[in-house]
Length: 390
Image 1: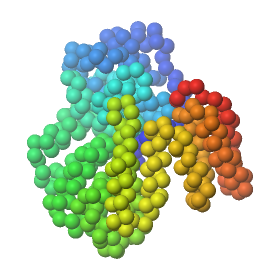
Image 2 (image 1 turned 60 degrees about the horizontal axis):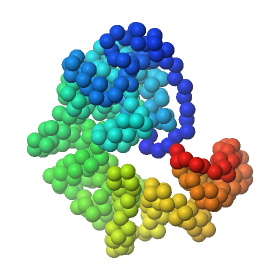
Image 3 (image 1 turned 120 degrees about the vertical axis):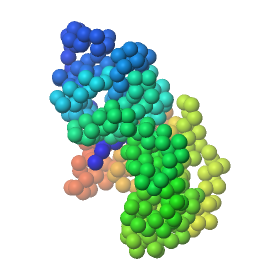
Image 4 (image 1 turned 90 degrees about the vertical axis):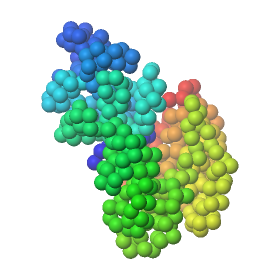
């Protein structure tokens, strides 16, 4: 299973690298700022424009490791796969390799340009700078080598996208296309193709094991014809895949649609309050039972992204007072978000009460005492003023 990170991790791992001057002497014409990691892949940290010039000049493909400093699976790749002798031999011979922190320098722009939405994302480019293939998640050595060779063959993600845009729609192709865009974390593309496939094969196709997996993995649009068929025929689906699976799918879809009303526009997060209100009315018309829970999680997500920390804290305070479902995970994660992002000391102090509740609950049971150290440290950190947003 590929490991993907979409949220902040606090794991830190040290790397051993060749001294810069020694690396430069060893690499000859491989670039002005390339570093080999323990005999592994020789990575460059040159500017993207310079990488493109080299690629065109040498007629070589480019491999880009899109990472962040906090991504655990990224560090696993760097420590294992990128140091493998066979991987290094292939990549150093056939590619110009570059590592880019997606949260620093030009990495921020490259992240948006190449639609990097999860980490690690591994991109393979043609010498002209066109994305040929994409891997999302940490992969083992054999899979990495296989995918790199797919990129070299010119039969990677880009070839499928070109065929799809050219109008290829036979069933076999659509099934393969859905797999490859889904694995590349291109969710909108996977959704559109999945809808086309199910429409072509008929709605009952979703009741087959293959059709159910395609629907389950790729379509969460609660207004879509596919979801409405599923929603109206839940008892029939429960007979085929089990009630637990049906419940998971319904909860995921209603929640994912609710999150979609918060969008990143430029450098800001915007919340479509009017659209969200209409969505809540739509849920009522569909007799959804857990509307208040969907509303709570969507607003917590929206206020957190927009930095409306006082409103964020109001929601958590109200939840703790009225619900008994606020567990240790929530009592750690919600204060952690404030500790990481919120500079308002008054709001930070409100979060301390949540941590205190977590400490009380963790202390009451032997099986949850593992939380105590982390909670105590979080409380200490929240007590200090934060002058910068991390």
